[in-house]
Image (cartoon, rainbow, N blue to C red):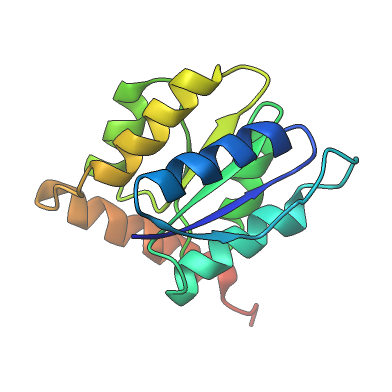
Length: 152
């Protein structure tokens, strides 16, 4: 699987571990930065990750920051992105099963590396259930389209 990853400075160390973990598991990684722990603003990095997923350059994405919250919000501003901030296996699994989330957000300051790698593995391995969830995702897409439409 091709996975896009991005982080800010607070998530750089964990992102590096995630990249190595993904490569070790045989995944192709599109690393969109940042490339050091030097302070940077996260929105552009997270948007780049989400855009790569939406454009089909990657199947799924992972964004990492201090709390993961701003990263999730930034990724979700990209039309077609469904980013989920996950803190445990349950939320990572349900984000994929029920919401067909395509970007995982992780907070490096609140998630230990061992758990973060479990979250990544769970997120990547869990398929979307479809069924009753499809209509809900269509409703979300309709809201997104309405909000993105030019004002008349």
